Length: 132
Image (tube, rainbow, N blue to C red):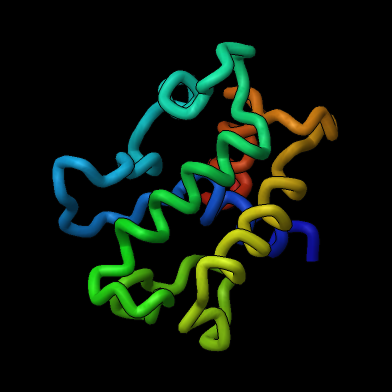
């Protein structure tokens, strides 16, 4: 069960950016960035990690960028299901997206500091990829 939670957590926290066509002003996809670059991209207050508010703000910007038809929800075409998500995960509203983000953030925040370090992000990625 913990592996499923970690897998789902990483899907949104670390790999929030799906490989989709994007506009120049869209928030960047994070999945292909090194963990240290994810932190430097999202760390607005300069404390060396991604706190829950910084991640929540990114998740909200990403939600709106993915909502291409501007109907206030993401369907499976706009945001394909990620590992650990069931078919009932779509469509999802921004509030649902944020709620899921918080749950996934908590699952990846191993030291319960309220801030994701590059090491926690990398560990979450490794867990998602089966320890590879």
